[in-house]
Image (cartoon, rainbow, N blue to C red; front, side, top):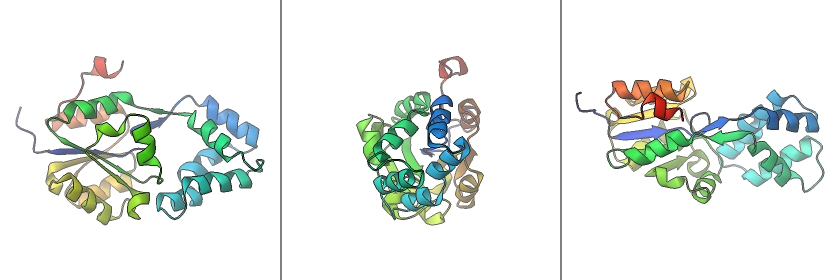
Length: 212
């Protein structure tokens, strides 16, 4: 196999490393609040308050307090709301452990439109070590698909665009990366991503192992 031109592997967080888990916790929470589960997820992942938090304009605590108020929860229940919501998501530890394994050969990066507490959360959970570099929108006041945040990530990872691979679950973010010359993969499943990475000469776990 020809030597891979890739020197850095950069992954998105939500929708790639963080996935929706068992639907029941979110469905139960939505029933208790009295809203559709689709609205619950939209407001927390993509709604105006979430986008403001991703831009660093409000804190995660302010977001949860305002959502709790809008949904008619008693004062002081914002922490409860956050804990209940996060019960319905899961980390893909196969991908996270794979990043740890390839760090001897590739620079690894996280590029995420995320709230200002993401770095603290990943450090507390013992996941931050998978990344050489973490670029988080709320910290930088930049969001994908703005080309500036990709250029900033490349600068911090220390590679040229053609030496970087970027994986994201949103097509507009992948296309923005490709427009700069970065190799982009649209995430649909872990095994689909691994298969596309192998075509570029990047080693990945075999299918049986990856599905454990």
